[in-house]
Image 1 (cartoon, chains in turn blue, red):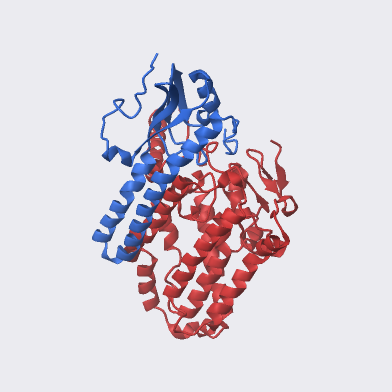
Image 2 (cartoon, each protein chain N blue to C red; image 1 turned 135 degrees about the horizontal axis):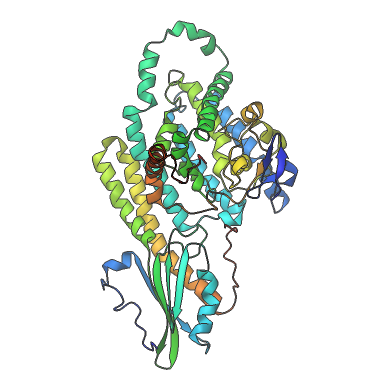
Length: 170
Length: 333
């Protein structure tokens, strides 16, 4: 059984600054004595959605997504791990996730700068969209991890049950 | 699912479709909100018509139209937030980024290609060969009538091109990508294969530039009616408006997962064309998309028409070479 919080350290290639672009890490103190299995049971409906596979092993939940639905609350993430970590007296839930959507948005300003450079007639709209995507990246990089953290907190506190809010696609 | 008979067809047998204006959802809220969301569409249409009819030449130009278009889209974002039609279509950060990526491609790369190979080039050559004196009967008509006839002609062309896309496999391959969207919002009209966006852009754009004021008024008419078709806004659309014009309700049926529903409401502006040609369904739908609502990634959207064409061609050749062998056929839709 893993008793050491290893999120954000050695699971993948460690690029502490650069990988912040597409990698989301965070943690949430657990003020409940419930075992890890109970914590993950409260979060399970987040992962029981179309396009998502996951497995729980001891204190870790690992998931993978392929083409998640629009209303999937974790649609920007492709894979990741959530760990129940023991730190001194307390415990916390820590996560480490990869987001190709953040990476895509990060690249878009450079792409449209390139378009502006190549196509003189599209210069003005290209610069406008460069600015829009740069702004959207900053908004997404700050907002999405906060929304995810708030969602976890609500679910662990038992304030949310199941429903993802999406229509029933088969 | 039983579905509802509309003309000779059963609508909603594959996926839920609400048929009949009396069954639509209504705007929730106070008197002022309900008043605004009942009369918003007609009021904007009247305001834009008056503006373009009486605006002095110094401001009645293309840049003004572009500015109004961008500002109006921003306003519709606010309306989507104030009065969403379905919460299951709410805008997320990722949806916004993907939508704007397609909008940006249309404004930059596709527009640049269109300038060199699109309808502007054809129009320039064709118009140069016209005998203008023979068009005096048209240019002598009232400005509003000219604009209406331009939009009507454009919409008849659009209707048949769109209907063709749903009935001829090579065109369907490019259009099908647009039908994988699972929710509507103001920018969803831009989502699709870049080839289709380019083909749609061909249309008749540029052919009426010799009538600058009428063309601007026509563009404004089209925008004031058809811009709502992909919007996630709950309106109390007046019955007469929905009888004449295309609405977001009509277009959601066109995007529904129901096969017969998706083969309805082909027009861009005037739904009476669908009524005339027998393809109108007065309804609305929440569950949209293809293949049970499967999400298509941007990468797949880019290559789908080509890879599907390759798979179909390969299967066709194999059936010809080995007629006895069992193999699956690829349906057109």
